[in-house]
Length: 443
Picture (cartoon, rainbow, N blue to C red):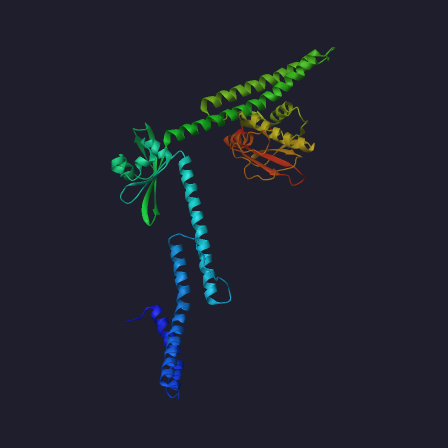
């Protein structure tokens, strides 16, 4: 039979001292001293032998019992006990150091787990989706505030009850990502399922999302985007109209008036009328379809188009490098809106550095290429240039470039925006196909 560890320690101590005790007793037996003295000395040797063995046993077993108590305390989650004599230089002290360090690590880990669990519970209570967790017996083990409101009961009344008693067993049978009608809430809910383990036991997690609420939120966001798009385009057109009207009013107030004032007034009114008419058609079609209307295919003179856009920009004189005479097939109102957006951005950039804006166009085998270059600071990044509602300008809406590219692509073209290689600044290039306008080309 295998002896316990403490008995083996005692036996080892007795056997270790046995040779010395035997020798002492042997010498004592041959000693000429009286019998009483020899018996007394023999008893003293035996007592010292047993005492030394027991002292060795206690010396070995006491630290082991201390470490046992420390490990037991750590096992039950009590990290307040600390081992004494924890120091380097000897094996026992180093072992105490490691046990104390283990307790510190486990204490920090438990605190982190408690904090994480508290955070998860706070998040679950704040989200608007209903969350339920069922164990293997289909009993409810976790529910958040939204889930309790959906079932119309307090959380304490729901936990521990089976899905059948709660009347929601059909949720567990429903396929993942399916939709159900819930009479208690009068809504349509989408169910998403997943499995997790808690305490070594598998649980099924159900997440229910109110589909109608999500749809209403998307409708609201789409409406806000539509309003921002329309506001952006209206402001882009009303600003030059207001500027021209102000100039005409100042002209009429002059005394005496210039000899050609009637021509200036007529020209300004024509620009205002044309821009207002084009904007009206654009907004009417946009409102009817809630998207960019398909472009009408009419002959558009590129030179005249560029000239009209240049006349609408009054903040900075535009330098026009005239290209070949060419007519394309396209929607003049949409293309004019596209160029207005590009010119407006270029002038905004050039105004920061007191630079210039230049417009030119040229031809290749299949495209008319319009280029608008500015002397601004250039692009810091072009990763999100055409993302709707993304803007780096203060007070900007992030609509102009996205809408401009949409117009270009609707005409079968392409719009790019890059930094200039010949100078500081940015250049926008609009490629429009020539093939669609062969019947109108005046070259």
